[in-house]
Amino acid sequence: MISRRSLIGAAASAPLFGSRLAGADTYPSKPIRVILTGPVGGLIDVSGRAIGDAMQHNLGQPWIIDPRPGANGMMAGQIFLSSPADGYTLFLSVSGHVALNFLMKAPYDAMKDFQPIGMIGVSTALLCVPPSVPANNVAEFVAYARANPGKLNYLNSANGTGAHLLPELMKIKYKLDITSISYKGLPPGVQDLLAGRLELGMVSTTIVINHVKAGRLKAIGVVGPNRLPELPDVPTMGEQGAGDVEVRSSLPLYGHKDLPQSIVQRVNQALVASLGDAETLKRLKQVYVEPLPFTPAETAKALNDEHVRLGKVIEQLGIKADGGS
Image (tube, rainbow, N blue to C red; front, side):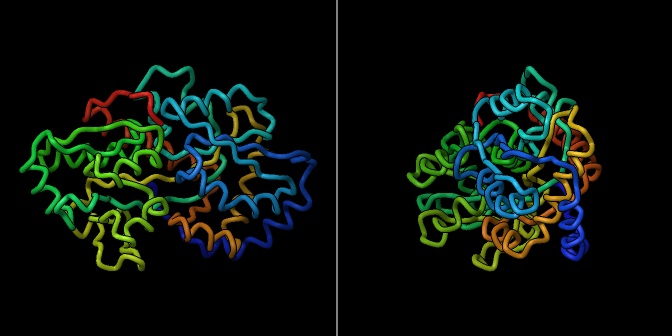
């Protein structure tokens, strides 16, 4: 998991960033298109839109979200890389995209062909089961799965994502026999989880919390450092002795590898200023994303660390790509 950095400095310096932006060069002079690896309504989409108004204000141009799910994020990556390296097309993904080349033979290098600009934040997820599963915590799910080997299925939004790796790590830790079912993103998989066609799913909190509150799903663990105020009785994975299987998703923003540093810094300053904006912070809190106002260098280091960590996990599990998203 990518670590948190304090927001105090970013919030205090937001007006300073705003003044810098006002006096910068002519970039941008037209709308900025942001290619997403995830579907409409997913974590990347709602997070990209949450910062949209502030980014438009700080950059002075429309911030256009363009979801292009498919092929483990590779479809979005190819569309992005085919665009000019002029800063008018950016790329927003989850941090797991850095593991793409561990999973498949891709037409690009997910580490070398993208230039980190900054980070929106890191998400909190919920590990959920349908009401038909007689489990209210991790231990009870483990007992149920052991009593029904080979009969339970879990939601996999794409190989190499947290939704895939966490259940796979649970399989190793608890010696479970549960089956991965692949979907193109979390939203369609959640429909099968709601219908009881799946028995387990790690899902972004913003997508499922209303279902949990309404009793349509049960949350058996919070994938994050703290319990949620809305679900005070749901313990974290760490509280249940399962913190070592956690895989959280952060949200890096990229430009092309040859994007001029002046533009990289311009967009980063706008992003950091946006993450210090009260309305933006409110919107991110509503979608359960904790802001990470990183510099480009801090973002690059965090992604390199994630690349190394996920590579080890993927090698350990023997995972290959499935073409999902």
